[in-house]
Figure 1 (cartoon, rainbow, N blue to C red):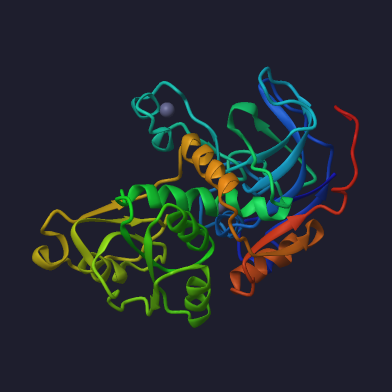
Figure 2 (figure 1 turned 30 degrees about the vertical axis):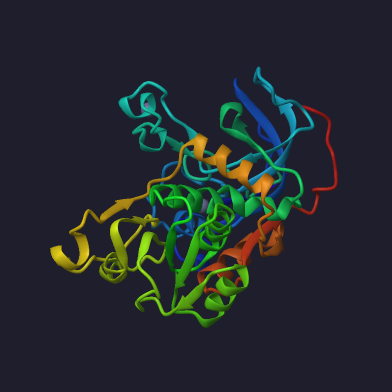
Length: 342
Ligand SMILES: [Zn+2]
Ligand SMILES: [Zn+2]
């Protein structure tokens, strides 16, 4: 099969990703073998390829937004050959630590991740522990399901972390892949949404999707907010986002990276029980809840498709902000079926 491996982490323009031809992997005990139908390209893949994240598995195959068909199984359980499944970032937790035992497996110190600790979806075939594979909603083409598996689930977790009351007023700071899915969930749940982002095109998209207002990133929204999500990795937006909160409001910081947060003023930014919380990965429960919502409310997903042969170009385009919507890789063999275990 064709696969892409992170040969030598470094600039995406320096050949850090290399295309290989190799045997189809075999599922270990408890795993499924999956024929990849589509794999989303996430900014985290770029961090893996360019070495911003430490190497966990040398020469790993990136990709953690995988939509595929099960072609072989070494697992007992409900998922069988022919089922369409989703593979996301989280692929192992210990199940025994204090975090796992209190439904916070996203904080498990022994967690492992697809496309970082184990080979992911920049390939024609990949494997996944059956316990970490997701059932997928009907009504979406494969390519549109892929971005739901990272951008969508993380955006949903961030939304949950704001503890937005029913019918509440939500602010969204930064409007990329995660935000454009999170806004649709918030609106479906009855929220009033104000989007604050510097890009005029993103502001237009926000209004198209149903935002009540769209303005510049550091502008004040037209009314106080019950909750806010900061998707932009810009620490300087934390003070204006906190200042925009109503009494008791919560700001969730959705990014893995954030630039320095300026000094906060207790009275202006925190008093009246305003809170600031971070968001770290997600639990499987978050994923199941979000995919269930996506099954009941059709989410508009914009994708740009690339053939698997052009994964390096997709990542280069992402690095240069040239991708419209979410980039998704499609293996050219995705119409072909193979025999189980072949
Ligand atoms: Zn654990
Ligand atoms: Zn991701």
